[in-house]
Length: 231
Length: 231
DNA sequence: ACTGCATATAACTATCTAGTTATTTATATA
DNA sequence: TATATAAATAACTAGATAGTTATATGCAGT
Image (tube, rainbow over all chains, first blue to last red; front, side):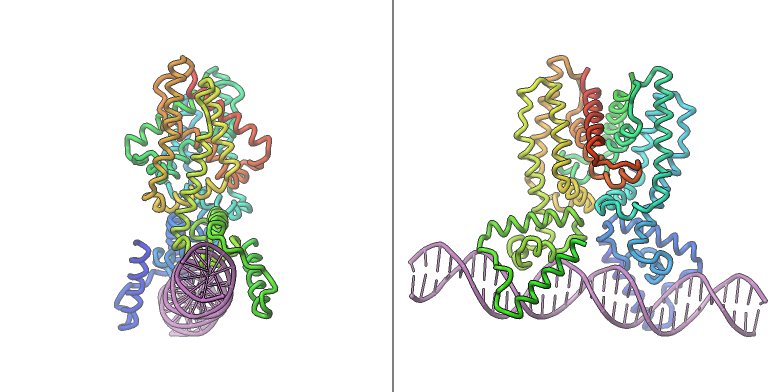
């Protein structure tokens, strides 16, 4: 739908432009940075909506209100653009995580805050999930050479490790909980629900995104994690 | 890689066939059922490997050692073929689930059996996960009209519901555990780990599929679920 | 004001791809 | 054995798509 109408309107602009001399569609100001940002935003949306193979470079250009040539000029090719979009998406979640100040909270509250944050981030940024899914569909080829990624995740792992240590010391957490496994599980119980919301809604015949369903889910997830970690 | 070499070999067969009279590539016996099965198998692999948009009908035909026309004859078009593959995949897991006889086991063992089964099924059938991911990338359009799906999941839900009731009655399970949420969580903690094994391996700098990593994961998952459900 | 360069645009192309058409061939049945 | 029909094949096509070429234009530094 969106794709078709976008293509149509672009074609329309072209047609009009041929007929007279630039009455329509004033050209964009010369701003390299802004153009790149428009392209990245458009690409993120298009890749998230249609996957790498399903995404169309022409659509990205149209949505970015940029010329397709600009994409190749700034980013090289479709694949490199996808890599950039992915890396930026990981960088975003990393930045958001770093604004969490778990040290100021008691261990159990901190743990709950982390679970809630993770859940809310996924809810607010479904594109992130789709991009990650896509990258895994492609066996991780685009991130293999990334230098940003291991750094990002190191942060998160450290955060959970120190939280676990603190809770254990305070006598509220069990000892011997594996930080990496916990990390994965906190992500999993939110991620799975949200990425599989479409098949999930069909299977269980209910709207996975309905407010009360979301409330039930986060409540259940908090229970899952606290029962797993707390004494 | 695989794609390219397949295409090349197919082209080679064609070229040879033109030159002389069928010395090469003995044609397949006329067996409609077998051909359909070969097409479905090939399609499953191709869709799982490359997603719906990335999958190539020509590759499916080549891998099925069938003519492309047969695909359109038996399945209509690419989309209908994908739907069929998806439905079959769900039917497969359903059949596997039905061979589980949880009633014969004490509640806790039954619960653990279910967690292990789910995990093992995902491990043995990574294609299933990829297909489901793909369908969700496409917002569930292909399964919306499916009649098989709700039936399948009803089975699983019933299984968990009666297990929970039995365990509660026996005094080993907590009361008030939501069967649907539990179902989702049991799936999630296995599914997420496996579908995200590529980015996961990069992020945590270790091989998610290494035998000892898999052992750690299933152990952790069993803990997660038993601590959640048992008193 | 001039000029070199980065930014932007439009039009083009080689290739790929889903889907078709035209034709051949095996097999079951009368 | 004759023949109707289902199964299979090869060759083709219209449209789409990633990536290019050729060209224009605004702007910063002189």
